[in-house]
Image (cartoon, rainbow, N blue to C red; front, side, top):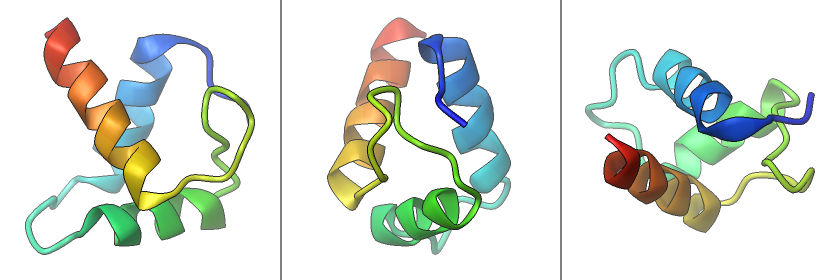
Length: 61
């Protein structure tokens, strides 16, 4: 599943972060990879890509 656009990215991260407390970027990346949620470029998630995605979403808000 390749994501397209910030809206899909926001939705995917929100589902994973239903309870964001206690979840590190590394843990969120693992969950996203387990769910076959590729990054917008089609690559696996890493902690840094989760952090960058959060920053992009915060800037767009």
